Length: 132
Ligand SMILES: [Zn+2]
Image (cartoon, rainbow, N blue to C red; front, side, top):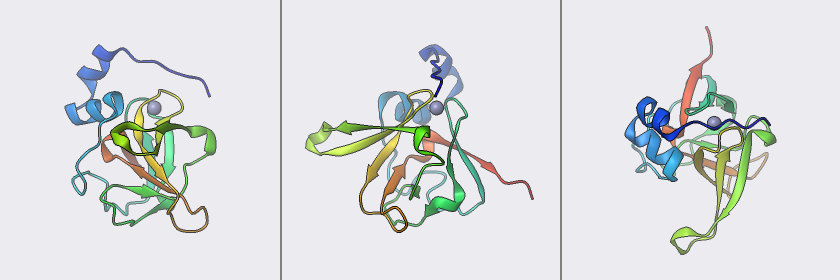
């Protein structure tokens, strides 16, 4: 995928402080506070930074973890996964493959058909609702 890079000044001006902190400083929003935690609206979840479509509402499910959870990205090449050992935990970080924005983490305890849980911060996403 073609990469894009934004200037930090532009992002600071365009994003909310929460969105900036999560996507650029690998922050995590507090559980159950995100805009999309329980959202069931049909549509496409895009990267808040670059607008790339990343997750479809069809793969969103209620995991109870406090963040939006998806069992698969829109396509494998849409996200990059990295080993993350910060805070003494072994986790897999998920970033937007296009702009490098931090999205959240992926865990091997999701539902069928993938068994994977993409635990994504609402602050990293922008829902593009399906037209009625
Ligand atoms: Zn992006």
